[in-house]
Image (cartoon, rainbow, N blue to C red; front, side):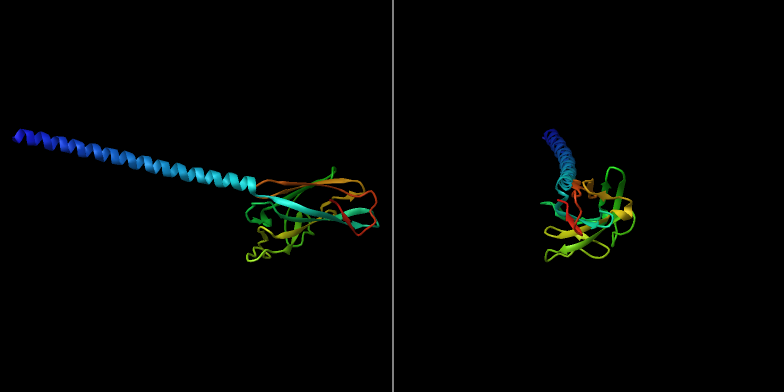
Length: 193
């Protein structure tokens, strides 16, 4: 009887050891699945940000210097694309080319300096105001007016001349805009869209 009891205890110990090994293996599998899930969610969030983030152009105007007949300043009315998260204009670059000169512009308050563009908030959507002097953030429904001083950046836009702009957020899809100055520049402000 003692020998059978010893075999039973030995079998029980082996059974308990197998359960412990299975539990450890299950724990490793659960941990691996959790890590993979977190990585997949992070990748999905990044992909969504890259696809959904961007601007939509509502209008583009040019301010003209009638004595020289050329467009000296561009004003671009923008809003966020559908589904876009908040975009801080401090992290946006605007590339402008007129065929002769290419410039890359960063944000500053006035937009009148060389190498910079400015922006003014036209409409803020309640209840979130992400637009402050140092942090010009745009949320869904907001409208901003971007100012590009062409003459300060050695660019000009004579009659029937084309300029191409690329508005590039830190993450997301760049927004392309092509404007052509009218054949006759007779107004202080010309519609370029």
